[in-house]
Length: 132
Length: 109
Image 1 (cartoon, rainbow over the protein chains, first blue to last red):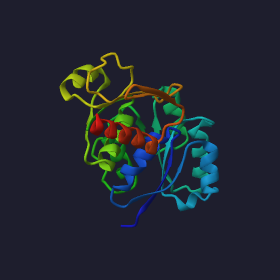
Image 2: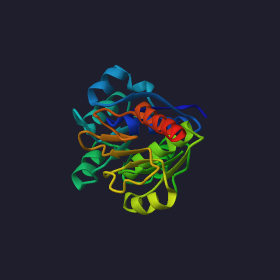
Image 3: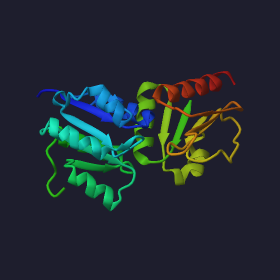
């Protein structure tokens, strides 16, 4: 199985770096880039979204909503899988994320195993469980 | 040295706690619910605590307390051996340096 290339976009660097460290220890996953804002994400990738397989993005970033970037990513790479992380699971936020076509949303209040499980499923490394 | 992590949200304490444990395998890291903080401090007797509230226990033998609130400014208020400081930016290497500093204090005190 080929390695899944992950781009991690999260403004809290302590959490982002810790999550990246844990993701790197998952088989067949490689964190190829990290960013702490929309601007940094655009600068980091230089819009080369085709070189990314999976994006993990915080919906609440210091310079705007992650949903803005999701539309750009989707247009550039329709096969890109997107997992949104959010501290606020308001109906409005979830509706916007759904409209932007995210493949999954995980609360930051959830256990890490739930986040890692969602990553593995979206990366095609684990079969989605029946009924989920 | 024993490190207790009781911050919010849950994914932060689990990711940070797991990363610290793997990067500093000689330490004992416990990850607990913030609501259980004071009970766990009494039970586990950590030398370093990361919590979402100030230290109101002032327990003897503890080297450090980090009041860690990622969604507030400043996100971290650190008390190591009675020396106080605030950090506006706190990333994983900074967290590890705080852990190492507390570990050194624990060895020499």
